[in-house]
Amino acid sequence: MRAQNSATRSTPIAVAGPAPAARSRTAATPAASASAAPTAPTAPAASPARRSARGGTVLACLGVVAFSLTFPATAWGLESFGPWSFVAVRSVLAAAVAGAFLLAARAPLPARRHWPGLAVVAGGVVVGYPLLTTLALTTATTSHAAVVVGLLPLTTAALSALRTGVRPSRRFWAAAVAGAAVVLAFTLAQSGGSLSAGDGYLFAALLACAAGYTEGGRLARDLPGWQVIGWALVACLPLNLAGAAAGLAYEPVHLGVHGVAGLLWAAVGSTFLGLYVWYRGMAEIGAPRASQLQLAQPLLTLLWSVALLGEQLSPAAPAAACAVLVCIAATQRAQSG
Image (cartoon, rainbow, N blue to C red):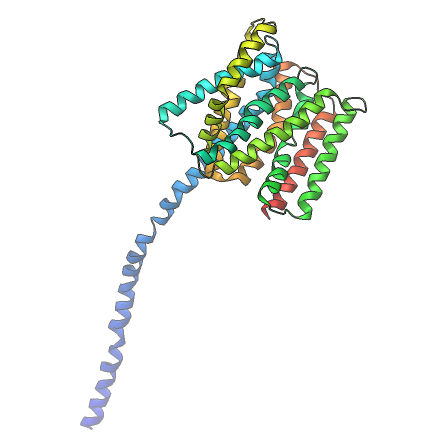
């Protein structure tokens, strides 16, 4: 009986054993929560990345807004300057601003291997695109030019594919051909069934700027983006100084508020600061996301042409612009996929 009682009494002792363990597990739960607490700062750690992405998006959007004002600013500038002197003086002023930034940042000279690419950027973005679009705007309206140049992201993607050897999908090229067809139909309809000299300038400007963007994007892997455009502007300074002297000597100049404002914005806002914030934004959010933001540029230019220049838009202009944006958006989706 004593053994039986002992066994009987041992049962609660045996059963009572797990209770402290259960209590320890229960007590360990706050400890586990406390041990998990150090993982909580991961949310604030991700916060700076999100803030950086938001800041990059804002910078890229500012660049798009700056670019969208280029054509209206050029149209204003042509009220006071001839096309050749306007482009040369614009580039000289932009080079002065870029040089000041480079000096303030104590930026080192690019390596020798970078200069051929910088020459392409200078020829495409600093000289070619501004000159060709300015010549086009002597005969074409800003709304017309905005729709044609709306094909710039697509042209850049095509040249980039050729330059890097990347083969986009068939869906990409289908959307590219559709966008080109829309632009060609619009230009033919606006010019009475035949391409004008202004259209020729615009299509040449597309190629020049796309080449400059493609090579600039390649150089931006080694140099900060703003230094790419800064050194390209400085490299062209002697040529543009000579061009400004010749243009101002042979083309009439009638200074006015619109002309001076257009010149200053094209030089400082579009040529340097616009590209400065654009490249900074691209560095934060990446080229694919930034290029999608630039799809809004043609529509913004159409709005500026109405608000600042009082142009009357034909129904075909916004319709063509929207169609181009849809086609380019499809190419971006196909390319990213």
